[in-house]
Image 1: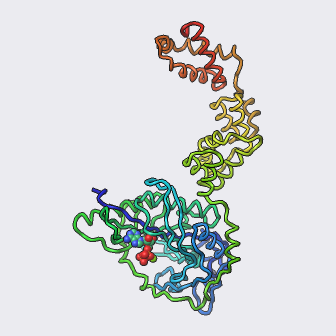
Image 2 (image 1 turned 120 degrees about the vertical axis):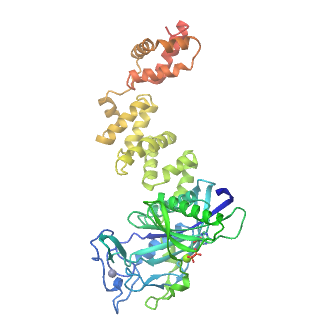
Image 3 (image 1 turned 90 degrees about the horizontal axis):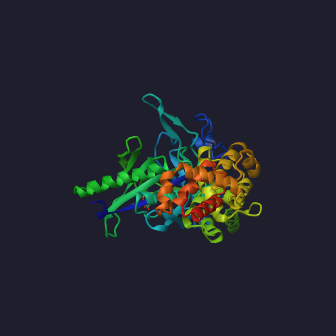
Length: 483
Ligand code: ADP
Ligand code: ZN
Ligand code: MG
């Protein structure tokens, strides 16, 4: 049924810029201060108070625009978006409407449906946030916190480019990566520093005109973006299949029940009576200012991913994992270049498995020094440590630090390459597995790997596996079987 319908999604993402102060006044923009303590005449809209744009916010907005390949306009306009809401004391939000800061960008991302895909960035503009209505502080009453009033935001609007909820999510995660790399925003959905309004419509497969869209709000995690869009998409399909029509409206997502309900009929932009803010002159940005922001951008994830593939011979997926976070990518490269240099692919495997797993359990800290990991990898390569033993050394170093060789010796893990000792373990294993020995004798030669595994086990990872294999092979050859 559902495959007779095509899903169309466009995202509007609000991102809080990483500044100390607000967009048009000197109040702190920090999250979590006691309610209504970060306010002043400007952000409260008291008579006679005048806004002054925050230069760092403008720099960060321009960096975001450049990072997303947008054209940054030398002249843009601040406009008033007028509406009443209890958490909006001025009665309007300063935003940009007709002449936004930047337009016509794109972001390439790894789509789960179609591989590398490109989302168009229709526009990126600067605006200020509104306050917050809190419904859970006092029974049956709404409390207002105006700390967020005037906090600097950018809004990033895509074209109707996504064809599935998980594709929309993949784009968002990539957008977050770019903004985090360039230190533009913390992008924490739970703290509200990244918020998404998700527009969705459906149309019959093959149709070219867009269907009527709804806008889903109140989504506060990346996983919920996908869920909310799925629920709303399915609701629209059900309405259309029953012969009804989709009403253009704003829907609120409830994550507890995984359902949507209409909030209000969607307002049109003319309802907001936008007009240029008479208190703010047009925003003029010099070529030098914009060029300077370009120099402040680091290598962004897509570029880094491509470079990792080229330079280190990694697969696209591995390179994508390693470049998802800048700190991890930097760590990886330090490991590869540490000392005499670690093998790039081995290092990639270590970082993607042990390092990331350990970080996940320890507040995203990368606990083993990159130099120590590089040393550990060479001990494995040189045959001093088995891979299994190296994992134990890794955990030990994560907990208590230390140099890999010292730690391995202290744990008694350095690999035993003494043929006599290994031969002893081989005998022990053969003696303990008469059934497998019998099967081996009957021609099941692939059991050799099983025996090697058992030798590693009884030696608690200390046997040199290559030596163990050789001893086993010799035993089989000289005796015709393994007895
Ligand atoms: P509005 O005026 O309602 O805000 P916009 O044209 O500004 O609508 O688009 C807002 C967002 O909705 C954009 O991300 C856009 O790509 C997306 N969008 C527009 N039309 C549709 C549609 N029919 N289906 C899905 N998304 C859409
Ligand atoms: Zn203020
Ligand atoms: Mg719009």
